[in-house]
Image (cartoon, rainbow, N blue to C red; front, top):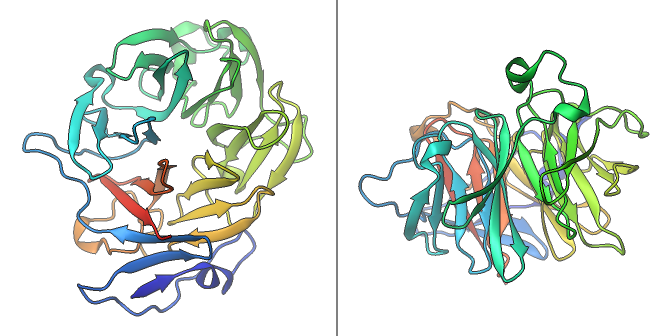
Length: 340
């Protein structure tokens, strides 16, 4: 059995939590590959995804979401903009073909007795709310009222490149403009603009690529967590955008934030998954930095079981199994089975 745990992360730590690749024994074909340690051990699931003929992956530069039935949703950059599969990897459907080329951030939220999916799209410069069948219910264009996109309607859209979306318990919608002007924007459930902030009023300072946003329900009051990727950290705010704290433990290029129970799952583009506890401290790291860490062009013949190339999206299901989408030109989605 090959086991890559937190010890492998802690050796060789650098200024930004960087880890050098440690020598590990390559597992034989019949061996299991276990990542992580302590309460967070996961078995790398080989040959998990089972797509039918005619359904192909393009680059996977997007996100992962899981619904209440534990079906997994992930993005790819062709007409299969959102692919839905069962936990076994069995294909259910593809949808949102009109959103090919830029489907980037997703979250699934409860609305009454139904679930809805929110999608941020860098190519269309908008956020949409849709049914789990792909019917668009609401479209939120660029935040003109924020007053930071100065060059008029269409040119401003080119500066607004939303990379992530989250929904608070009251229905408010938070969007990270991660590839544009590096702000977080807030709307109400009707798509009416509320406010924007860029972190400059907090102790940690301005955002640099606020690539992911999430709502933290672990405390007495909901919070907004921002994956401030260019600054190698996450930042925590009130729902009104007031700074609370910033954390760097185990992070180099955090892309998204996914919460389950008291823990946070963070895909890091450098080549690993960081798991933080209720205090936002690192408790486990899944994977090690490899020669393909952060490499969009990592070819299939260089992929190795047990090594990610560039984790960009990740989510847990109800059993604690994790699903990871690498930022990869060929397309790669991996399942990690929680070891009890």
